[in-house]
Length: 230
Ligand SMILES: *Cc1c(COP(=O)(O)O)cnc(C)c1O
Image (cartoon, rainbow, N blue to C red; front, side, top):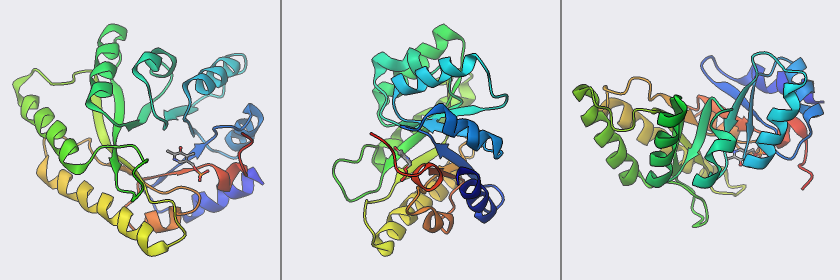
């Protein structure tokens, strides 16, 4: 079941789009099965759960497995997350950005991040607005040629967004289209940041729509592992 889903989804992805398997609330055994099917990128949304899985895997490591963090990250939890992940997809405030940078300077690590863009209609969805992201990236780009980068221990890799939680494909499409347009705008505007090229959009219910809007990463949990056991 896990293997079949991974193969079906992977086959449907165009070149340049990667599958991120969202393993939150699923046991290590499910991760092992997905890994056996060839899956290498996994994502968690809670620091405690990520750390527990990382520690459990130390006994019998899965070579080449890469972790992403996709949940709201509190600044007092950074040390539970940052040493173990290759990408933080859910940076949603300047404060968090500053703290990730500060942590990285002490730890000697440069952390890859995506900035979370708020496009959904719900108030509750976290993330930056366009003008806030623009402000951050313009400052980063302006500092780049000086040899004194603004956040030297952060590498800005792109945007992450979540569509409105609805069955209405037009609403979802319009949310993703906003993320896609903004991504294109930023890439044109900021040639100083050539590594800013990832657009993480698409979950179990809407990843096919996301593919039509330039997704380079789909984050899929339920459609691979089944319903989560909370
Ligand atoms: C849980 C989660 C997902 C995966 O959701 P599914 O609907 O189970 O595919 C994707 N992105 C984020 C940010 C999540 O928190």
